[in-house]
Length: 96
Image (cartoon, rainbow, N blue to C red; front, side, top):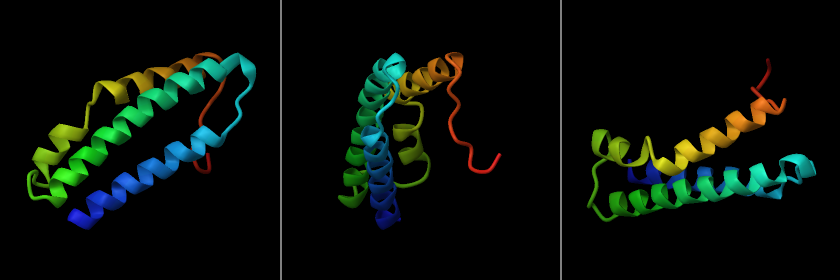
């Protein structure tokens, strides 16, 4: 499970890196900046949790979930996504 937690953190970092590489229209550039700040904070917290799992200081399952889900930074990122939708930008949903 330790490897999966580290892999999860790596995937999150990659996703945020891909978003960072995007060049949004000027009208929503500020949203991207806010989203990235919040997303990076969440990814950092997941990384810290992954390190604690590797060190045996945090158990996978409920203890890990309680630590990484519902983060204030994730909530801020979700609010930015709502602002994108309010402005007519919709995230790709993978085939819909």
